[in-house]
Structure formats: structure tokens, C-alpha cells
Amino acid sequence: EPEVTQTPSHQVTQMGQEVILRCVPISNHLYFYWYRQILGQKVEFLVSFYNNEISEKSEIFDDQFSVERPDGSNFTLKIRSTKLEDSAMYFCASRETPGTSGRRPLEQYFGPGTRLTVT
Amino acid sequence: AQSVTQLDSQVPVFEEAPVELRCNYSSSVSVYLFWYVQYPNQGLQLLLKYLSGSTLVKGINGFEAEFNKSQTSFHLRKPSVHISDTAEYFCAVSTKAAGNKLTFGGGTRVLVKP
Image 1 (cartoon, each protein chain N blue to C red):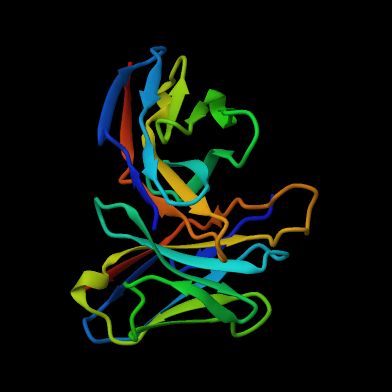
Image 2: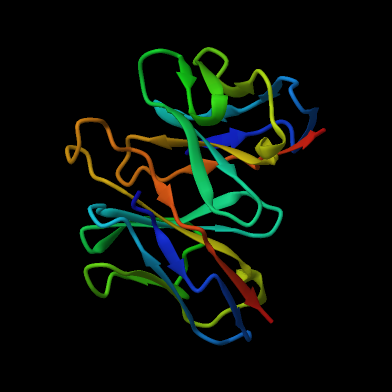
């Protein structure tokens, strides 16, 4: 069964450094998402991406964050200058667009996550 | 804007006993409802979803949930749990708005005891 993959599984970085988290969505999916989960807290939406542009972003997704689909398979989240409070598990998700299958494909498929630790 | 409340942060339960995880939501528009499970050190896996139609939804691993519009609830149930059901369970909502972002509840940690 196709699945969303994320690399690396764990990233340790120093405060102020740039990090890029990578995701490979399921191949026929066209909607992409990033969520994060700070330890012990709820999963929070960061950004959604469709047709090579951001379709929605949360208040968390400030100028330090950016997303990109550099080629036909990868979807990346960049944090320009990491802060201690960016430490979290970051999940990528993808879904089909309506009409690409016989059902209403609203299910988002999640990757296993990247644990980011900022020291 | 939508919000989701999971009233129980932890639910201990004995093996083969039933379990119910409560979820309430608020939204000014129609919502789609989901339950996700997160096993230790893993990502989120969809258990079941309510999009429309029958209010009783059956999912994987013997779980079911009932959508109650008047009470704005979507409680998850399983009649007999196994040790392997030990995990964190998240209720989530999305709307028909562009992007269909998910808004999650705080999660309920289920600990199944032998």
C-alpha cells in the first residue's frame, strides 16, 4: 500500500540554524499538509499546499517557515532560523483531490513524522 | 473556526472491557469528523470517518463512532479492547473549505491493562 514517507526521522539542530524537513507524499495526491505536535500537546495545523501554492496557513506559520515542492515527488518544510519552541514532531500529510476516485477522498494520509529537537 | 474537545486525557481500561472516548466539537458550518490513532513512536492512522449518511460509522480494528448533530458529539467506542489498542486517540474535524485542514482535539491516551 502506498504511504507517505518523511526524512529524517530525527533532526537535532542548534538554535538559529536552518532546517529542512522532507516529505514524499503518495504519488497521485495533490493536496499536501504540514502539522506539528509539541510534546504532550495536540496536533496543530501549519499549512496546506495545492497547485504549487499555499492554500491556507495557520498563525504558527510565520515568516520563518516556508514550503516548497521542488520536484514532482518531494514536499519540504523549511524553518529559516530555528527557536527552542520549534522543537516538536512534524507530520506531513497528503490527500487526493475530489474526482480522482469513485469516493470522496477526504482522508489525509500521514507520514511517520520527523522529531525536531532544537538545542 | 472549528474546535474539538476530548474530555478525557487518559482512560485506563482492562483487557476485554468496553471503552468509550468522548469527543465534542464546535463549528459554524457543516463538518466532517475523523478519529485517528497514534501508536507509540508512530504517525497518525485513520480509524474511521463521518462524511455524511448513516450516523453510526464503523472503522478498523473493531472501533465504531456515532455522530450526534444535536449534541455536537462524535464518541468512539469499542466493545472489547485488546492490549494492542494501547495508544493515543485523536478526534478531528474538517470543513468543506478549501484545503480541508484538520483541527484536532487534545487526544485521549488509552492504556489497556491485562
